Length: 277
Ligand SMILES: Cc1cc2nc3c(=O)[nH]c(=O)nc-3n(C[C@H](O)[C@H](O)[C@H](O)COP(=O)(O)O)c2cc1C
Image 1 (cartoon, rainbow, N blue to C red):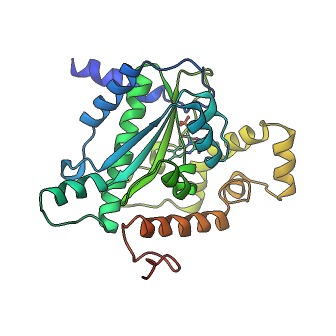
Image 2 (image 1 turned 60 degrees about the vertical axis):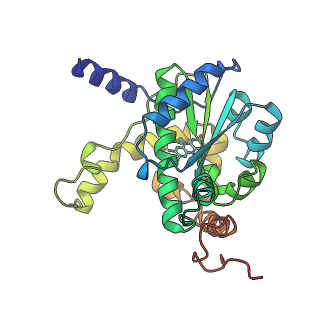
C-alpha cells in the first residue's frame, strides 16, 4: 500500500511540466473547490494559522486586466482560471482584534511566515490540479506587478500577492525540462562546493540544452541574442532579455515599498519608508 502510494506520487511529480497553452474548456466549480479544500487540508502551516488567501479570477474582463499586469502572457487569457496566492495576516489580525487579543504579525517575520504558507499552499494546489488532469503554470510576474495586482484585487492591509497559478486543461504536451544532476543540489552533513571544473560539468548539459532551446525559438530570438552580444546561457539569464539586474533591482524596491504601504513593516530598503503624517 505504502509502495503504491509512493509510486503514484513519484509518477505525479515526474510527469510535471509547466503548461502554457490551454483549452478554453471551463473547470467544474466543484472540482476547483475540492482542489482548494484538499490543498489547504494537506499543507502544513506555521502555527496552523493558515496565513494565506487565494483569489480566484475567472471573469474574462478581470482576467484580461490581470493579464496586462503580468506582461500580457497569453496563457492567462486562454486558461479559464487564474489563482493569486497572497501572504495574508489581515484575516488573522482581524480575528485577534475581535477577540481582544494583542495585535501581531504586521512585521517582516509575519510577512515571511505568511509568504511561506502561501507558497507551500500554491504547490499543493499545483499538485492537486495535475492529479486531476489540469495543467498549471506559475507566474513570477506576480512579484513584478504586486502593487497593481494588490490594488486590482482590492487586497486589504497586511495582505500581499506572492505568486499566481494559471490553471486549465492542457492544450500542449511539452517535453520535460531537465534539472541539474542530483549532486548539484544535495549536500550530505555539510555544504560541499565542487571545484570549478566539476561545477561546470554539473551545468554542461543544462547549458547546451538550454542554449539550443532558446535558439530554436526562432530567428528573431537568435538575432536578439546576437544583438545583445549573448554567447552563453549564463549570459542570457542576466541579460536584458531575461532577468536584467536593473529590472530586478526596481522590482525589489517596489516590493519593499508595497510591504511598507500594506502595513507589514517600515524597515525595508533605502527608499521604502512608511509615509510620515
Ligand atoms: C515562482 C515561479 C515563477 C514562474 N514564473 C513564470 C512566468 O512568469 N511565466 C512562465 O511562462 N513560466 C513561469 N514559471 C515556470 C518556470 O519557467 C518552469 O517551472 C521552469 O522552466 C521549469 O519547467 P517545468 O515547470 O516544466 O519543469 C515560473 C515558475 C516558478 C516556480
